[in-house]
Image (cartoon, rainbow, N blue to C red; front, top):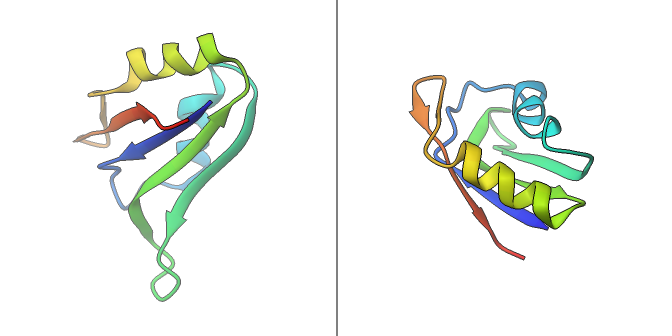
Length: 78
């Protein structure tokens, strides 16, 4: 299931972004969208978690959670 994550601190590394979601199960895809000019995060990304139950648990546990002082928003998109 695909998750969309918004309101991400632009200084969060790709590795830290991935670590947030790995604990919920195997990831098919994990993309932190980066600005091609600055190389910094654009503040949003997408994660695909293989198992539906794991994806729903990630939404439940991470939506509204403060990560680097920013409350991220996590929702299912497919």
